[in-house]
Image (cartoon, rainbow over all chains, first blue to last red; front, side, top):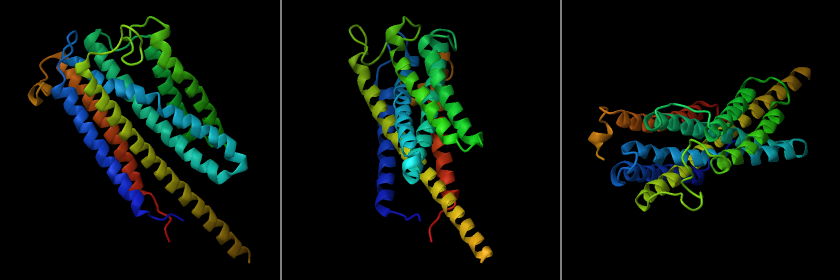
Length: 245
Length: 47
């Protein structure tokens, strides 16, 4: 049975308010306070939203991966715990699709202005597209498959997606790509001017806090659905027992 | 940059900057709204 917890509700609203406040600071830094990029001009400001989305699009898949491993471990040993892990896995998969789609779209919009092309089959772009497609297929499987093994099959896809994540991260280090060099952790000769750091840092933190908020909110929604389904099943069993008396 | 130049659509650079920020707000806001709508419309199990 679901019980409303006022403390959790207050924490959720506070988390939401903090994430919005940090995102407003990040927007102000990105648009109004940071000087235009010396080489690109104002279009370089797209990076302040593109880079944080790209970074978080590589973090949330691991939440999905770990939750999927817990699901596979618990599915026979403790089905109730497995359901909780499965709710976290589906929430993380959706958030991964949100962040990777933003990464791809904003990157494409920037590419058209900076390179003159919307898309190129570069290693970084292709591996990120693959990550996005893996999670779309994960969600489509969850939505349309009618076998009893849907969650197990989805957990296997999440393992493939987790393998792709380090390939995406390392692609601009392993290969000479059209994609710009790493902004962070790229080694000597890489990085950004100090004047750009506040805009990057505020937006990385802001989109991270926001991502955790929507992840937990989606997880709570899935748990509510699961409990409703369990209760409906219980009522059906009780009703059938009443009839058989 | 100012609000006026942020919404100035006269150059491709400015149009693309505005479009990319709009995409982020639409996708993130849309997804959060979808969760919120389902949250308030999902059948609760309280007794």
